[in-house]
Structures are given as structure tokens and as C-alpha cells.
Image 1 (cartoon, rainbow, N blue to C red):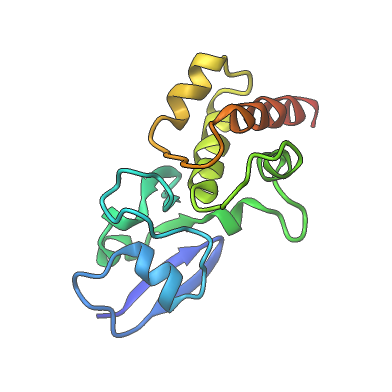
Image 2 (cartoon, rainbow, N blue to C red; image 1 turned 30 degrees about the vertical axis):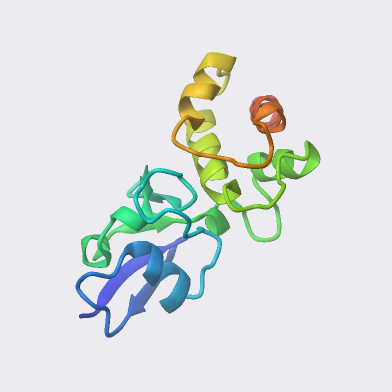
Length: 156
């Protein structure tokens, strides 16, 4: 099967896609976008979160064929050229990245939250990130990074 999808604003095509392949596999292995991580393959950890038609989705749970003709934005697509998105900047500056496995999903979830709610409360931040598991950081630096990113976006 052939899958045509727009990824990070660019039309892309994947050939010889098996019917059971996930969007995550296609993004990582066929289209060379390794940013979204493959951790649980069950939609539990959030590491593979991408935007699918503007809505966050676990790419491991989306069959590649379901993405036909749709718009996907990965963690790589949050940046604008060489300029990182404020969420990406804040994660680096605040030390919210350790092993990095959860980071792509957290970045997409935080980006989505701030786009919907430019001034989220701590409770709203925690709720928005609840579907993303991190085994390294203890979350405090992640929360600091999201607060910082929201403040940066408010200034811009």
C-alpha cells in the first residue's frame, strides 16, 4: 500500500506499507523522522505523540493507512527552520531533558496546551501532560519548562 501524507508541511509518500504498520513506524523508519519515540506501542506513555490534523495523537495507535491525505506535525515540525519553538527552548534551558525518550511527546503535549491556553495553571499543565510518562526527571523541571515556555510565548 502507498501512503501519502503531509508531514511538517511537506507532502511525503511511503511505498510498500504493510496494512498493519503504525504511523509511528512510517514516520521513523520509512520517512526518516526519528523524533517521535517508540516506547510502549500501546498508547500509554505518550512518547510518540504527534499532531494529526491539528489534534495530538499517539502515532503508535494510528494505522498508517488512516493517515492517508492527512496532516501530521512531529516534534521536528515544531521548530521554524533553525529556530526552536519556545517550548523546545525552555525544555533545554530548564534541564527538562534527561534520557530524552519522553521528551518528544511532552513537547507536543506542552505545545498543544500553550496554543489552546496561553496562561495555564499548574493544575492545567499537570492535566495536559498526564498522558506522558517520564522515568527520569521527577517532572518538576518539566513543569518549570512549560511555565517558562508559556511566559515566553506571551511576550512574543
